Image 1 (spheres, rainbow, N blue to C red):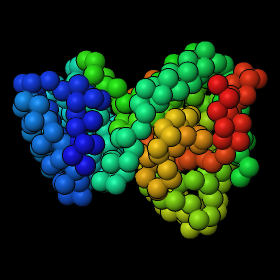
Image 2: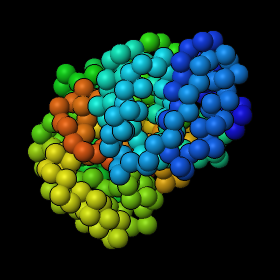
Image 3: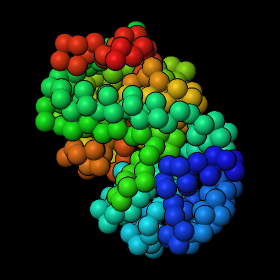
Image 4: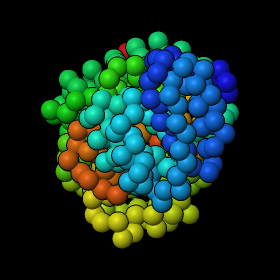
Amino acid sequence: MKEAARIVVEDCLGVKKSEEVLIIVDQKSRQIGTALFDAAKSLGAEAVLVEMVEREAHGSEPPRLVAEAMKSADVVIAPTSKSITHTKARLEATKSGVRIASMPTITEEMMSRTMSADYIKIKERSLKFRDLLSQGNEVRLTTPAGTDLTFSIVGREGMADTGILDEKGAFGNLPAGEACLAPVEGKTSGVAVVDGSMAGVGVMKTPIRMVVKDGYVTEITGGAEAKALSDLLRDKGEEVKSIAELGIGTNEKATPSGSPLEDEKVMGTVHVAIGDNIVFGGKVKAPMHLDGIMKNPTLVIDGKTVIKDGKHLI
């Protein structure tokens, strides 16, 4: 843990002496927060550790006091139980030039293992896929479990989560390792079968099958996991059912664990999210953002196969 915390603070975020570092935790992540606090303090930073009440869901806003503190820090590290990635507070802090690492649901074991990955290779892979997505117009995604989706990505910019967050306004997840974008709203159709894990639900015992028409999930079927997802989405409005993201995992040390933070980074998987996508350059504002991980995908961009049965071809 001590070495992993050092990598986060020094190698990934490039914390320097006298910088103000805000570490946000809740009850479940106190120990990880303490390790990060000690690592920042050892570099001579003005480290501050703040504990908030666990949020209701991924994407729920932090308290106003925390949001205001985020904007005034040089660096924010958030190993929280629920993700702050898709929040107004995070977006405003990024616009203010704050360097931010979001680490939702991370455990000590996960942190120790995934932060030892080769981040130079992760950066290379992520940037290659980012560029392919940015240059593409249409994507088709299929899996052995039954996924068959087509997306329009015309004019959308890909993003690379490389783990190197040492520039002003840099933002990403740690552990890192993905390329992603927001598909054009209203243009995704087909069937999505989540057979890996689903944010807010967990690891799949019975896959979740979602019918997608004109960019929205119109039907959810399956077992207990499908019911749990339906319950989670109930009374949250229609926008929460919008297709929000297409992502590609690029971290060779990540393994399926039931945590979206790690699962969406697993090399050889693709994930599709529903809900909010404002932070990806999309147009949908929703109260949550939920990633569904799909195993052994085949991904075709403008007729070129870039992933075949989970193996990268670029």
